[in-house]
Length: 154
Image (cartoon, rainbow, N blue to C red; front, top):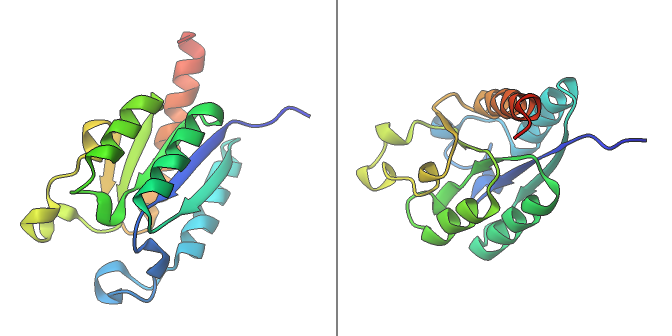
């Protein structure tokens, strides 16, 4: 049976605490709710999902490297690495996959140190401030991008 293309969903530090951490800012949805939403949307569009979260920068980068070998695109919520990790940017540039960066909150409405995202410099698109629905939008963007690339023969 042919395998379906795989979208990697990589979540950085502190996203394991969704639903518990600052619910007035992040809401009460959990990371399990995010995974359920992403898997349902991806399945409906003909994709499989490799869903991952780590509080370790190295583990996040290792997962991105794995995506290069077997993924067609990445949805990345870098969490606390957003405004600090040049290594994360380097990994995104190295894997050469379409990447959609997702933030549950609008980082531009928060503290000024959060306004810069290194990952954005490698991202095809950035979705922020839409809550966990942003992950579903990201699946749609990647699905369209992958299908367009397949049709154009790139």
